[in-house]
Length: 186
Ligand SMILES: [Zn+2]
Image 1 (cartoon, rainbow, N blue to C red):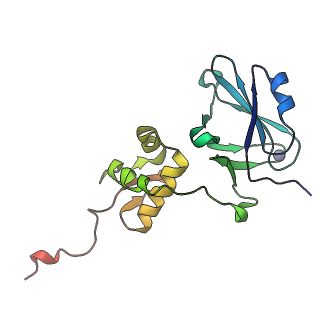
Image 2: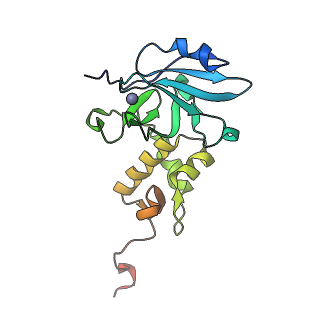
């Protein structure tokens, strides 16, 4: 029986890993390692396996995640995926843990900001697909939120999502109507 959690709590900050580790007490606890800049985030694995995950936040040290603290809660991008060990795969989004694959059924996404819809639609272009990630950086928004908003626009037939390698890439679909142009029919 694992102690699965759906919340990530930032519990402390320290300069080095051995000082940060004591801040972790239960699954989903996290501590920031900060020396002049954010270096990494320690997370006690939220699936309850007892392991400490080290998420690199420093692009100079290799593949790095982005930690966003807007609203006072942590968001990580991209998702965290342990290749070995317990195989945990999850998204951290405004302090919520959204599980990928396993446990997905109980996911609850954070609240939706309706104002973002118009801004994302404006950022889309009619022909070229743009990635949700690129749009997010341009708008200074969280990529998870841009993807969610863009998919909502797709459901309203205002946007189109790419396929294959262009999944999570979007374009403006408002000029792509397949209906015949009735204005010219006599
Ligand atoms: Zn684990």
